[in-house]
Length: 199
Image (cartoon, rainbow, N blue to C red; front, side, top):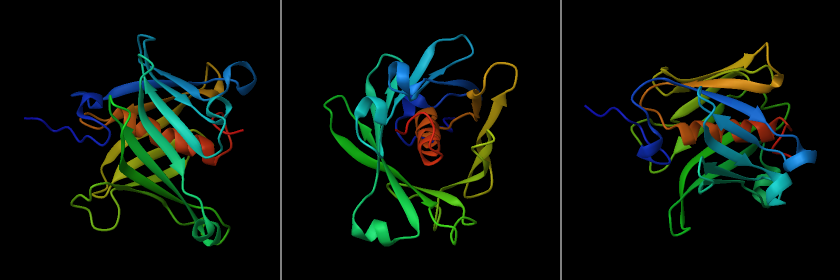
């Protein structure tokens, strides 16, 4: 029985829990962003941010071959500027370069809304009523969890204490869940916290 839950694509859903290692790239050397490898040191994803793309609030996720698979942008405009929340949209990219909205993430951007959770909505709408995924914990401390609307853990982040502090950490993605989507969420959190994808 296939229990995969694709957001970007079914090809990024594995049948077993997978540990992904994330290593930040310095902005001064190669434009920032980060590289994602498996436990065998194979590059699985590459995340480019402002240092490479040259635009604030825009992120690109590529697969291990360097093909763009997910484009993420922060929504702008007057309505967004007056809102107490930031909205990010994630678009999957096909082989012809066309993109379609697959998820949106909303995070509180003011002191008033800081206690509000970061929530993710999947497109097209699924069985959940108001949100599909929620992020809890602290990205800055490399200790956060993504849960689905039933409360089930989808991915969990942790720090690699012995290697490089905040520059090197891991994310365990549960079986059947879309790894490209999870890395897209990590890229947005990285940008929100002013880290390697931001300039």
